[in-house]
Amino acid sequence: MNIRFLETVLWLAQLRTIKATADRLCITHTAISSRIASIEQDLGVSLFTRSAQGFEPTADGLRFIEEASKIVDAYQRLRRVMLDPGRVRGTLRIGSVSTLIPTVFSILGKTLREEYPHVSLVISTDLPERLLKDFRGGRLDLLLTSSWPDDPHFDVVPLCKVAMGWVASEQLGIDTHRPLTPDQLAAYPIIGYPAGTESQMRIDAYFSGIGRELVLHAGNGLPSNLQMAKSCIGIAAVPKVAARGDLNRGDLVLVPTTQPYPDVGYAALFLRDGDNDLPRAIAALARQAAAQFCEASDPSDAWPMDASDNPEQA
Image (spheres, rainbow, N blue to C red):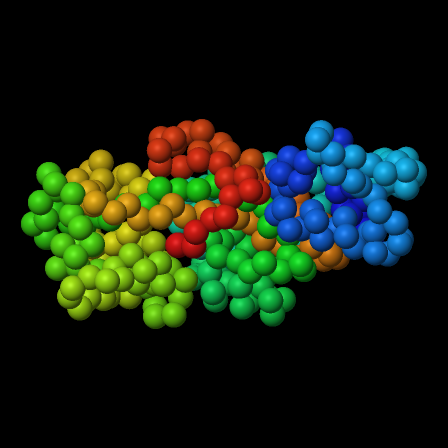
């Protein structure tokens, strides 16, 4: 049991639903249920019952809420006294998928310079699987990613979802006046990702059941895949918002399709019970940055993601 668990009980008592509480705390529904169950098991009491109005505190729950409120209030007062973002020093190791660097991170970086001027950043960009391996190995403090496990040791802060589209160089000669089926798309080389990654598995699923063999070229992230597409190597599935500049300049064209590519979700990930509070604070700022990015983007290209979403992986 820790402060975050106590806060979960207090918010559930106030908001009455798992969904609203998860959205407020920027964590998953599963994490909310797990925290409540952990406290109930530890104390040997039931804190809530279900009713037509949602989750209602039991008599034991009301006693718990009264005492927990005192503890949380005291803790927050202590944090306000002790923590001044302008005085925080240290290094934060952030791993990010390449899609988020020119989009959400461009806004987040400015906020970090203003609010945490003495914190040094070490930024690593890679495929989600490799980032997660480094995160599990203690080599990263915070992930900005499109793929993550359902792990009780991790907190997940939803950031945003983006619409995907197939793009190619105009020199490939694709007729963009009519939508292409997956089989027709497969007549051209496809730019994907290393075999076995979630990103490539999505592409494999998209072309499952076609009547021809795919010619696949593997890149290691958005910048390389966009460059290969501009170099007339093949067709790539990318976030439309990340390709807008190339599309507007005419370096790429959007290829219409009969079967849309699934939207992709992004989130910040950090250790739930880590000793360092900085990743949690930066994850919250990343969510704010994602909201600002979505507000400035075409709403059909990018939109905020809440905790109830089950994001697809890029």
